[in-house]
Image (cartoon, rainbow, N blue to C red; front, side):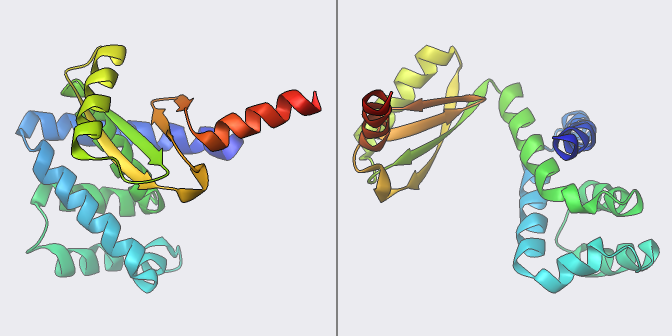
Length: 183
């Protein structure tokens, strides 16, 4: 629990700062894409991630390597932000900061990020209908649906929005039924 609190105390201020800079420079999408690219790169190259997170390696050397590799790919604002994360020994939180930044951008645009786990792929018509219901229920201009297929749900889906989980899956119903039987 303490680690989680510490992480949120670190992640939120940095993501807020990045959001504020992006808003001032009107570069929401550029910075979002840059951060996603950098996070993907660090996740896929485990050696690079270890290099960045190792405290024994000089911070200036890390920053130089990052600038050498990414200077032609990333926006200078993003590159400077990543350099700050390295300098402040916060680079290990870059993925979480990026995710929180994306949430702040969506919130600013009155868009809700909705993760949906479903037993099978929804049709375009079903996804659109679900989107409309969620927009109405959560009083927002738009929702961004992210689907994840989970066959173990058997049928139906689970909706994850903000801190809420709405489970309308057969698996959830069976678990609830099991709970009543064992009560």
